Image (cartoon, helix red, strand yellow):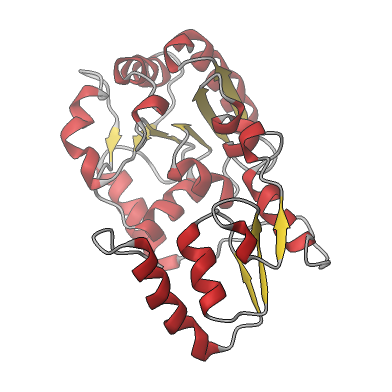
Length: 269
């Protein structure tokens, strides 16, 4: 559901409620408190409405205290609490991404054209994030990539969206062979690339979570003093990840990320 920002929230709620009502849903779960969504599912007369007790939470039939700001557990666990509130069994969530044969062939061709042999282990680096406060300085990424290729001899692929194309020169070290796939991959191709990579280095970002979902270990960089935006809540899900968490992104040194990369890559080749 993508709301129209120019329309008043109550009008969007009324419209969504009208759209949902004929479907006769039995249960609605709202994981992100919203007056608009709470009102919509009430107007749709959905008999069981589960969510957090704020932003008109009185419209819900099952309400939980919102403790997300404490950052005590992963966001996945907070959302599973909503299912537990219904008295339903909850099991550990795991992801099993399929193999995409045609996309895999395309991705391997792309990296081979840029000097990365499909048979050799490589790492992926995603130097960007949509939130400036979560951004590790790009010059540090440039130094890290230079050292990964030059000192550790690790083939490296830089990834990012189309919106990052204009920034890519800032992270590519001069005279160092790096595969640049920024802005060149579909979402499925990105998943395939991350499946093939031995490791991803990234800020808190979508590709970090995608790598975790396809079973690729990550080195995830977090710079925040606030637990609500820290890795206990928003870090890569699952085992085998390395999280570097400091009060700010500026406090994360290239040397410690390099040492983490050196140690992790030595164990996963």
